[in-house]
Image 1 (cartoon, helix red, strand yellow):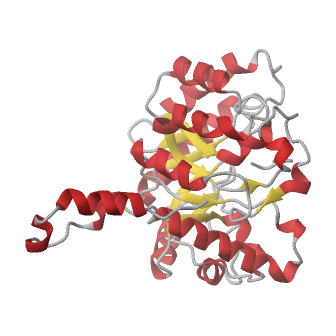
Image 2: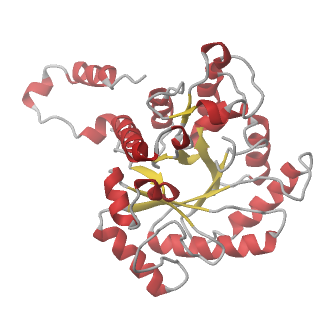
Length: 326
């Protein structure tokens, strides 16, 4: 989200698994962790947050945060502007560029879990389709299977935009032909935080290539009552390809009422470990749905903290997500 946007361990699961194994477990080797809980999801961060570490080298910044990898922003020229480095620029435009990026991620034990596009579909659809085609080809070579997109009206009226979005997303999905890449619409802004609008778009496009970049806090930002958030997550969980994880801490009397979208967001945006959203429950829902992506940190509350605390806030959020990703 680019605009004015607890935690029980798995004791129950561990206990249930132990009881199910019974006496036989005493004689047999314990099953692999993945067999009981599923694989550990990578915990990542949007590359735009690397600069908050104060480090001009994206790789040491990534290591300072303790993340497994990054969501990487890509512009129309296939440049990665937020991957800052004192000696080089990163791009996906040529084979040499791809090799350099692949090699450097491997060198620093990181991975790209998603690319991020900032779309303006209703202003330049033909250009956006070609951009998507080129990015999907690069993503395929780097074994990145998710691209975050957004559906925000710029020139088309809100009432007409869902039908336009169906047309546009069909063309974007066609541009992925021959790749394993999928598109995750971020529920971002006024339209795509309405479940009925997401349903209309998903049903209209009717492609397994189109899913969701789930931003739970955007649902809360939009005005959905806290008690309704996990129900919406359950509704769309099977379509989630990627995530943005952030939170909000509203006053108690405002949590379970319908609020105006964006109500006091700058004031109440909060770190994951202080917010109202039950990410343990969200993770449980996604695991049940077979989600295989990442937990990607997005932070829109750093402005509430002194600059010297920014790194520690982000590190605490990463640690929070790693506990849930186990």
